Length: 361
Image (cartoon, rainbow, N blue to C red):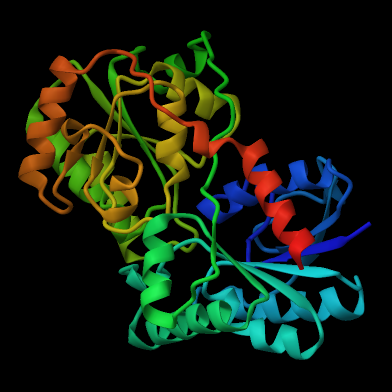
């Protein structure tokens, strides 16, 4: 039985983040195929003492609770554990920051798979030095891993141009089967009505542009609808505190971080899903909204364009005026439900593709 050790994620289950959602969906399916899978979690994010989750073993390790250092220090500790404690056959590293340790893992004799989830150095929260280190992590992951996985064609194209990395495997993010919830008790708790709210979710960081969404919604003066934001910040900072103040001042409903039936309820009954980001890898939140047949409105960044929506569902990134205009139009004209082609985004298919890469190693 092959031993797979997973590093670079904060952990699973029920931990905020796209990489975390990816791992929570993917690795139980791989474990179900007979692989010995261990995810090494960051102890400060783990709110439970679970030894395993759906067949995936869980190990907690401490790290510095500073956003610039926590990932790299934790991944170094994970590499050491993978080699000398767990005797891994394959180390699977997620994201370009943790990929900084790829050469170290190879020097220890580990086989490494690196999944590139997005160009994190484009995120506004990072300073110049952090962005340089993230770019270096991207280069080291692409050049030193035994196998490279990318989650979008945009990333695939970019690393070919930057690093002549011509052997990356394109495996999209996935979306679980939707769980439609008819019960509206959670909506009642929030004070919203079915099909009478706009829904957005994600981390409270500048590149999500939720501040622009609040501005645009407020300027509509559509008192027949409400705006609901689900999510929070990993590390409370000036931006997240200001965003929460802005939301409260404008009557926006904040749910905090939600998963499970609460999230399914919000997706089942929303009138419109909005993702105004300036940066994404391949947004799982958008795929989830599409799986619930929701009309969507998203920024025209490359990752969102790759999903292939109708032009009516895009607006120019950062353009609040166009965002306001499109919001109003779609609230009045968009069908209540819309079907999307999601064949490439099934987790069972993604698990099979990932296992094939493990077998290649």
